[in-house]
Amino acid sequence: MLYCHLIPAPRPLGTAILTTASVAPVVLGLAARNTLGNLIAGISLILYQPIRLGDKVQVDAPTGQEAAIVESISLGYTILRGSTDQKIIIPNGIMANSVIINMGPDGSA
Image 1: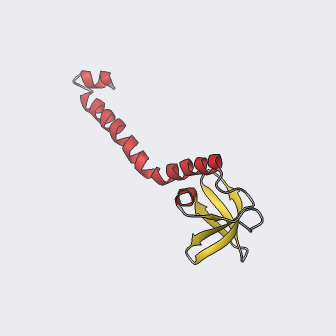
Image 2: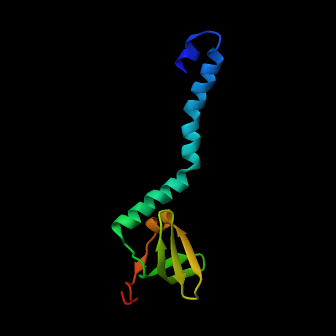
């Protein structure tokens, strides 16, 4: 890149490479913001374990308060099984920033 920028003939090529190298990380960072946020929140949920597999929790769903059992915690999403046997899939970024009532493995708090 430096070679292309120092010699007059390929200077436009060197400038284009330098510009691309400067803009590409910003574009990639903006595009991956939610994915990286979910990944970091997933690591936090796995390390600190505010909820564990089999725990009965109460969360805010679009339909209102929902009591569900934790089925799976991955790096990107937490999967809950609702009272009517539906799956509730919550991105970990939302899960880490929500107030969750953990009623324990037997649901008795």
